[in-house]
Amino acid sequence: MKTSAAPMKESPSRLIDARIEELDDWRGRMLAHVRGLIRQADPEVVEEWKWRGVPVWYHDGMICTGETYKSVVKLTFAKGASLEDPSGLFNSSLDGNVRRAIDIREGEELNEDAFKALIRAAVTLNAASA
Image (tube, rainbow, N blue to C red; front, side, top):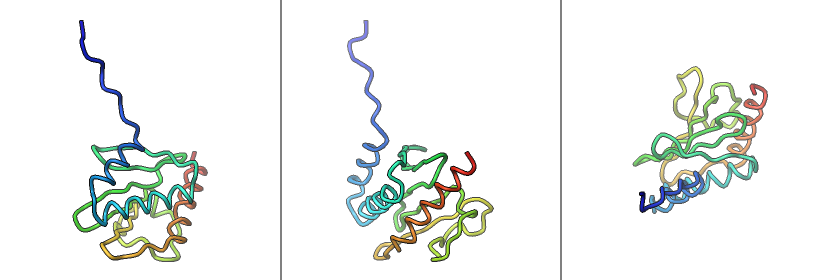
């Protein structure tokens, strides 16, 4: 007879909350900030927790990931190469055929309107492919 119940699986949103708190520095603040912008741009976004600790945002397919490294918060757009980027936010993974990324370093600011436009464009592209 089992004496302990199986642990409940935590929701992806709570795992992302915990990751933000765990970082306790500029990276946590930036991850929280971009998460808020993603939610503003797409209120129907779905949060997932993948690959042992990477926040991922979905709507009719993957929009982007939010990875944190020692010196950068990296937002990788799954279909970034297919998105218009008139503001030039993409500054990493520029040679690939599919993905594009935005690397944000400490002290840098993100063009919020351009970022939300990229999120909406990614959602539109996913919906067209669905």
